[in-house]
Structures are given as C-alpha cells and as structure tokens.
Image (cartoon, rainbow, N blue to C red):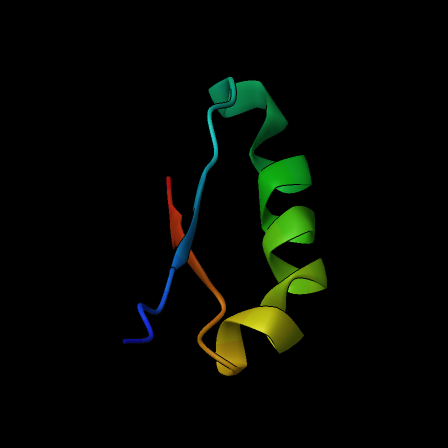
Length: 41
C-alpha cells in the first residue's frame, strides 16, 4: 500500500517584507505547478 505524502509550506512574514514573500513564491512556482508543496500565507 503506497501512501502519498504532500509537502506543505507555511510562510510567516511581516507585512513590510511582503516583497520577499512574493519573490519566494515565484522561486517555488515550478514545484507548485507540479503540486509538490501546498503554500499558505
């Protein structure tokens, strides 16, 4: 029996650092398109 594990990423940041959070999300976009990490902000 194979159980699929799903990677989840939680991003916590100060609103002043919103630019950095958006840049990080851009960098992990290729993984997200393959449905590897679930990202929540």
